[in-house]
Length: 276
Image (cartoon, rainbow, N blue to C red; front, top):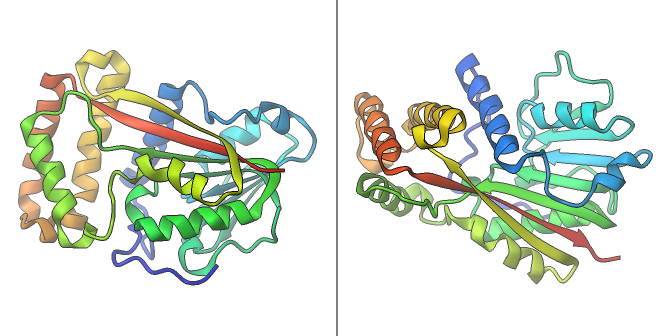
């Protein structure tokens, strides 16, 4: 795959995660697994219970998904790829981590290598044209009959308040995201179809409650949202004309509104099978 360049770098490039960020990433994984009642939506159970299936997770920062998959489906080979080095302490024996930048280097594998390929939580990192190239690279490494699955948060919130709507509009219009579609999750089906290499293209969207109306899950999601804003909004603050000192107050305001409005955030999985 030829080099493709994003105008705004991946947050995790050359960044050492602190304990709060690691906790946040683990929590994101658990929230998504809970709302979908499982770690994947593709019909790959029979593939994984067969012998020696090969599974690739792109953007595997901590390896939580791989570790759980390894425990639930032993006998497979699991590989995590990321542009930063992953922490390999305590990793299962059948899990391997590879440092590789899919955006600029492609995947370091031959064609038709994997039975199941997953990429999660990269929506904001790439432009639409970059996403098209990345999807082609995933498909190149996927075996005929294998499945690819993309998971991301969307921006089509249910019951958003006016402050959240204004915040999202500002985020969409700032310079560093102008070449991005922050709601690109709604285009993944189209991108897969355009390759003419995929069939059985499906989409599943679940809504994560943010606040007390979602009981324990919603309260946990509210804390996740609050921490997420405090952690990652500094990345965009200067482009949005914000002072860093104001971010905690912004996080409080947005989360209070979400709790009062019974706001829900969409999480979507798009999955498809490579034509035999």
